[in-house]
Length: 138
Image: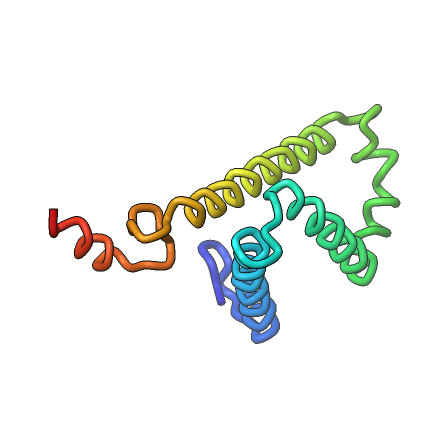
């Protein structure tokens, strides 16, 4: 797969991208079941269970790819918050934005499930044609 400005294509890039898309879809299905299924977790509880696992995954992968060594080598010159606040600020803003996005998404999903019993208005599992069929009878 190639993007604007990158005119190369590698099979490894395609496989990694496809695998990431699969994992993202799996996350959506799993989180939906945990919020609306038999487990019925609150969105903040779900984030509390998923965030440490994601952090562990990123930490292991950063060690395997050598990124952790690069960060440690550049810490005193580029990444130390006492030297340069910019990287720290970007990481904190990104983390807060990600937390807010996930909280809103999971709350919306729980709301849709709770309010979609029979009326089709908020139901994410029905098609728009089902929604129009229900409301065109009025």
